[in-house]
Image 1 (tube, helix red, strand yellow):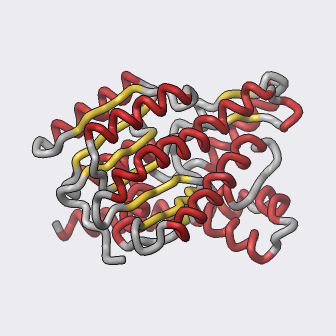
Image 2: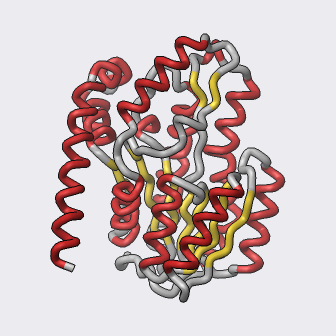
Length: 296
């Protein structure tokens, strides 16, 4: 397929109120796309929408407050978008939630909440909006998985299961839609988003265990969302089948291929190395940004 053309198209972005979703939305507006944004956080979504209107007065930006854990509400939103936009150039399924705790420390209700938001909502939205993508020549679909869709550490059963499902679902669609719609799977590493601070904690997780996990994630989640968004936008433009973001994704992915059985243990043992690699990447990206600013 030819390179993706942003200008003049309409994009749907979920999880757009903060983090990667908000940064992707800003990048798409800067590239000339109209936007349909979705998130459950009404206040943050309102602020993001207002900023996009202010910075891109020529673009049409609409926002919708929807809880993707609600299957019926998700389908209503998707049907309304398809009626309003019978032709869509881009769908970015980015929304996601997390749940801390071993499998035996979480309830089935908690577990299914993660699967509903991270995977089932993506299937619902893609199924309903696929005709609108097919109606627009040169369209593209992006599904955001995670490095935990490649490796599966202890304490992340629900999250890893949902992200492995996203990966498999997207890889199937890539083959089924080949030559018709571009399809990209995104595997972010340690991106500094709100997912850790807003994560639910399993009902059976002790408080001290939760605190230790929170401190660990603060150290690991360091890559700015804007860096992740630029990688995703480049992947869309170049029709890449897969985008790995940060050495905190690339290193475990390599280890998983080299040590396919032991990669969970290897991932846990490599956190210090990954932190060093991530910090180096941030410094390198900051240098690039300074260089771009001096040229412009």
